[in-house]
Amino acid sequence: MHQILIVDDERSVVDNLEVIIPWEELGIGTVYKAYSGDEAAAILGRNAVDVVITDIRMPGMSGLELIGHIRRTAKMTKCILLSGHAEFEFAKKALQVQADDYLIKPVADEELMEAVRKALLQSSKEWEEMHSYRHLARLMKENLPLIRRNLLGDLLHGKCPSAADLTQKMNMIELSFTPGDRVFMLLIRVEEGFTAFDRSQSVLLEFAMANIVEELFRPYFAVWNGVDEHENLVFVLRALEDSAVYGKDGGEGANQRGVLERLAEQLHNHVGLYLKGYISIIVSGPDLFPQRLQELYRSCLFAMRNKTGGERGFFILTDDRPVTREFHALSSLHEPPSLILLIEAGRMEDLWAKLNRIFQEMSASSDYFYEARMEVYYCLCTAFIHFAHQNGKSLAELIRPEDYALFDGPAHFRTVNGLKKWAYGVLEQLEFSVHQEIKDSRGTIVRQVNQFIERNLSQGISVPLIADQVHLHPAYLSRVYKIETGESISDYVYRTRMDKAVHLLKHSEVKIYEIAAKLGYQNDSYFIKVFKKHYGMTPQECRDQ
Image (spheres, rainbow, N blue to C red):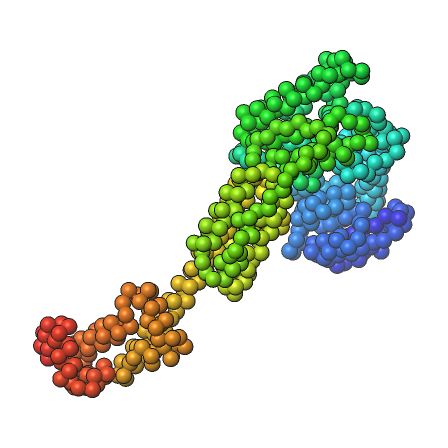
């Protein structure tokens, strides 16, 4: 049974329609009622309504606005507008919001029932179309790239169906690969450059790259592309039977690797020329599809991680022979003092120097870059977070959001330079934030000192007394004050007393000996002597001017 919603700010209209119309005859089992657009929107959010009958003019959300909301949230729901106006402008607005029918009040029962019948009939047709084979086929066609990519991802990770099921799937998604084929693999890592594509446009870059591969390789190879979880582009290639590189028993087949190498070099150059960026390419194969596809992928991934290292723009053809290398740990990372120890000691110059040595050592050798990158990245993360927490802050408070977002894993950094740039940027922000906080803290101390001095000029003021008030050691207080103001506390006390003396002399009738007492001088003769030395005149001469 269908469901219908009646909406009108006049309760009598809604209640009458609910009772008068024989809804069961139309196949409607549930009638919802709403007396405002907002109430109707809430009902629609909780229930699957087939048809909405709504007044056009209502306080708050109008009928037109309600239909606009429905078109955004429940496109299959049919909408019938009721209006007390037969004006063209209202009909035009009804068309703009894609109302399914437009009736003028007062509406006859049969007229309304006919409109509802038509709406339900149209709804049924659309649902049938939605579930028809034709529609499903069209949806599948539109999503072929995603379906192909997902299947390739499964195969790369060893999730392989039976040969019969795989053949059926390949035919369904129009891929000319069959079990038993011998295939090659290209693994492409996007490096630096690509200034026309920002981080949010990675799909566009992937599309552009796939187009270049298709254009170059299609005359010789069937191409199947995808993207792995490391954001590497993966291409599976099978030599075409009618191409010059095809051959089952040697002969022309011996040319396949040569042609593949030539095309990969062209790809490398085309990407630099047209997309203005650098890529690293690993080629592996041929091997049996799909049984050995996962091994092909692993060999490419291993080569990408360990042969290209932190450099950009490599092109490598792998072979099946394992290469044994002597592994060298990053001595500069682990030699004392550690990053955290330098941070705790506040030795920032030494910290910068240690980072420079670490990145120089990484750049000097590309062996096992993948693991070296992880090791350095996680050490940096630990050090940076410790830096922030040691200063009583969370890391997110101290650095830019775009830099903070890169703390979710080392995969963002495909080169030594990329990791280095990020690390230096984060450390600069941490240093600035801490220095700014120290500066603000010193400014607060200076203000507290000045306020105490100004309130207590008549007292015997000393640095130890002030230090006790602000809870700091006298020597440290003197040093902080001098750094921030450029003058000593004693100089400030002296200058403040002289300024206050001039003000009292010019703007009051207070006697000179009283002024001396207000400024903390026990002897007015000494005050007169100090004043004359500072201003070149006696207090009385200053008052008489």
